[in-house]
Image (tube, rainbow, N blue to C red; front, side):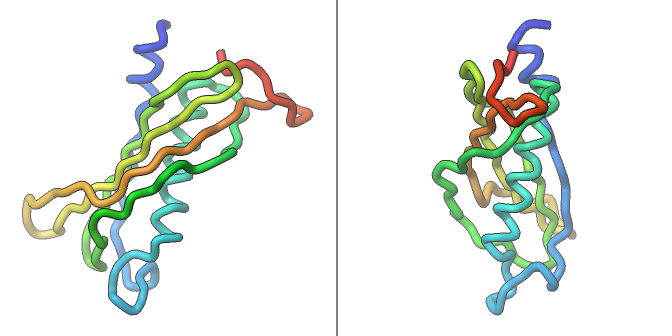
Length: 127
């Protein structure tokens, strides 16, 4: 399978409902909760792409452009955006969907870097 097909096939989408137990005193999703969900989606996309043990080594600029209110649905989309020798990057976007309308907008974007490791936790080639 070529790299473009692997990128397409490893794109990962997760949907979550934003409940009050994940929100702050402004009734919007905690930034840390959003980052946790983003890292999880990025990890799944990286693993689906490489089919190897992957570990997060960094998160690059995460832009919180819109608050994510309680009572909405979020879709997280993770897609491999860069391929190195032992590492890769996954871009993650969070979209807000109103539960009772067709309104949808991008709220958060960020990028996560992963390294492929062997059973001794040493870096290995991604491909």
